[in-house]
Amino acid sequence: MPRLGEIMAHLRLVLRMGEVTGTDLAAAYRDGHLKHEDWAEIVQQCRGCAWARNCPEWLEQREQIDQAPCTCPNRERFTALKSLQAEDA
Image (cartoon, rainbow, N blue to C red):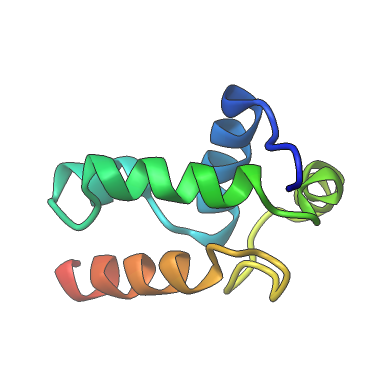
């Protein structure tokens, strides 16, 4: 079984991926689109991602993108939350 990454490091990666994809995770939580359990699951998915060690450098090279990379285990979640936020706007 692969070793999971450090929780706070992956929380920061998740938050940064949200910024880069234009997905406001704090607003999604506040608006009820993201529950506490969902937050935990997103971070847990990131912790188990084999590509996560490449993610910080990848994120540093990008200011804004439409979607998380296909290697991101949370890609569909970011896309879905971003769509909900666009509907709410």
